[in-house]
Image 1 (cartoon, rainbow, N blue to C red):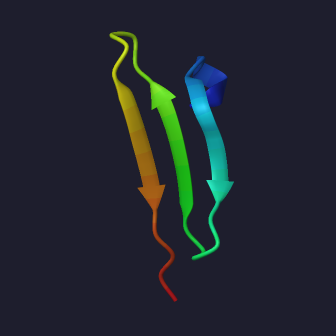
Image 2: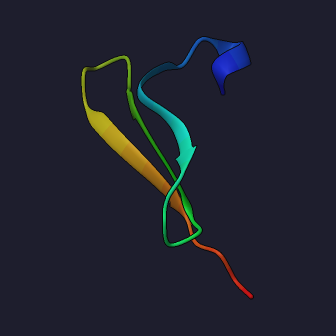
Length: 40
């Protein structure tokens, strides 16, 4: 997504619980959060 110019307000980062969270803004100004959980 970064390669396509997505403006992250919170860069993708690994959380203490093992998952990854990233927050970005869409072209209309909406703030979206992506979360990837860790499956063991």
